[in-house]
Structure formats: structure tokens, C-alpha cells
Image (cartoon, rainbow over all chains, first blue to last red; front, side, top):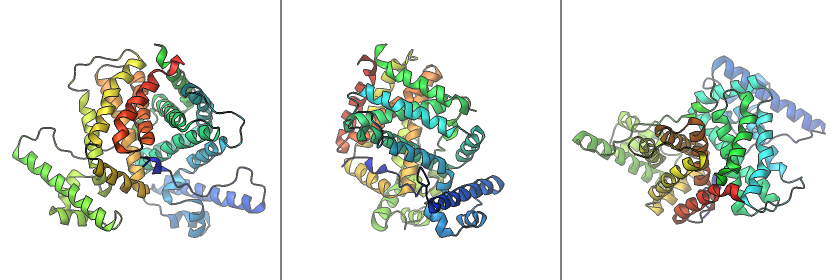
Length: 211
Length: 211
């Protein structure tokens, strides 16, 4: 029955990694215009007062175009998180790291990926703080963020699986890596601390049994 | 700035542990009638087609009474989870366990609480499976469940804090305990396996550094 495995998050269309065609570049620009329009409208009028129609109008695209890129209004808020998920999802496909033979090795394999996530998400500290503030104010956004965060663990598990790691180890390591991610978010005093705090959490987890 | 600490979940009114007054017993019955009415209507018409007004009418209470017990329609689905959160929240207040001095001891202290949660949540296996099926079908419910699950970790952290454990250890242990909880949910083939799977995950985490 595989409890909880159905929690997979239905992602929306995202741009290719290397946009080499004119169509792809146009799509990327349209998507970015939607994100920018939403950011501006949310900042000016508040999240609740802005509709998908407002965002589409401001971005000068139709509602159909909006829904090609984002499942709903909430998804625009998490555009960057979706990109992170896609990055992880594809990380396992094109690397040469082998299967992890035990829990410890599996967690070690996920550490650099989690550190990279924090580096990516905090490359613009102001934007990150603005995003965090918006999410904290809305129950719906906090709930959606929690789901995105769970999906991080699933995608980390998938990286290990694609390298040939046993399912039972991959599931465990994905959840432990997420625990390090969440510990870092809760301990960090500023967004700038996230990378070092997550590294510290991994150190702590990997020395647990030695006490 | 305390990133992510604002993710606290705004719980709704829940009954006292030991309902000793007539008013408390009446409140408990009204709350239970709302839950039963919602379960029945969701099963018959589907979650989306049922409104708070429908549920209140079926339970023979006013909308005001509904909102005294539940923040919104989604909350009724998670009535049992809310009770679990309350149980954890109060666990630290009235026990005699001391502060955990290190990560390992902190995680050991949370193990019996997580096992008790699974025992509680699966005391009626059919109801649990019915609930899981409903949640998996709806993005909004999956998101809200993810938020409830995050709150489990916060409440577990609070238990350790109330015993005098250092914040930095308590945060880490709460997230690791949640990782064991989630690992169990993903590994369990049936709900009956949840207790044993979570116990196994704790064993694995506590022997991580010995490899």
C-alpha cells in the first residue's frame, strides 16, 4: 500500500537547463515576466488581493500562458523552489557516483547537494528574506512550502536510487538529509548562515553513534 | 531573524484531556458530531463538493460552532493529527525526565513518543487508511498534512526544551525524530507496520557513526 508515497508533488512546466532555441528563450522570458509581475503585485497589494488575472495582465500574457508555467497562484511564489527540485531530480541522472552501500555513505552523498541548494536559494539574500516573510504570513503558503520541502527529500531519495542505492537506504538518507536542511533553517540567524549551519548538522548526524 | 521559526501552526480549539464538566462533555460531543458528519459527507460526495455549511447542517450545529472547533474545512480532516500535536505538546510539561545532555540522548528521549504517535494514529487501521486515501487525492490536503507533520517536529523539540535541553540540540533531535517518522511512513507496506518501522529507523539513526 506504500503509505505516503502518493505525496508526490505535481510540478509544473519549467524551462530547460540550457535554452538553446528561440522558442525556449521566449518561454523563459515569459515565465520570468510572470514571476516579476507577481512579486511586484504581491508586494504592493498583498498576496490575497492579487488574482491570476491580475498577474497575467501585468505580465502581458494570457491566463492560458500563466497556467502553462504555474499550476496556480501559489506556485508562482515557489518558482525558485521548483527550480531547485528540478535540479535535484536531474542530479542523479548525469553523474558518475556509484550506489551507496550503507546509510552513512548515502547521507554523505546527499550532503553536497543540500549545501548547493542553500547556496542557490540564498544567492540573493534580500529576495530570499522577502520570500520567507511572504510565506510566513499565509497559512496556505506555509502549507504549500511544507509540501515542497517534503518533495526535496523525495528527490534526494531519487538521486540515490538512480545511482543504484537500495530503496530502504535511499528513503532513510533522503529524510535524514531533509532533517539537516530543516535544522539549518531553524538554527540560522540570518540567511547567510544557512550553508554553514547545514554543514554542521550533517557533521552532527554522521557522528551520532560515536558518543 | 530566526528563519522558518514562524512556521508554527495555528491550532484550533480542542477538548481537554479529562472532560469533567457537563459543558466539556457537550463540547466534545459537538466536536465529534462535526467530525463524523464531515467523514460521512466526504465519503459520499467527495471532499470538494462538501462545504462547511453542509457539514454544520448534517452535524446539527451552527457555522459559528463549527468554527469554534475547526479553523476551516481542511482542519476537520486533520482532527486526529491535531489531537496528536496536543498530546506531544503537553507531554513535556508533566513528566520527570531531565534535560538531554547530547544529541544521542535527546533522540532517545523522543523515540517512545514517536512510537506512541503511530500506535495512536493506527488504533483504527481502516479509518487511518481511509484518511490517507482522502489526503493523497487532494493537493490542498497534502499540503496541509505536510504542515501538520512539520509541526510534529516543533512539538517534539518543545518537549525537549521544556525538560531543559539546549535549543540547538532540541531542534536537531526534533527534526531527526521526524525523519524517523517519515521514513517509517514511506517504508511501511501496511499501517500495521508503522510502529515497527519507526523503531527500526531510530535504531538506524542511533548507530550511524559506528559504521
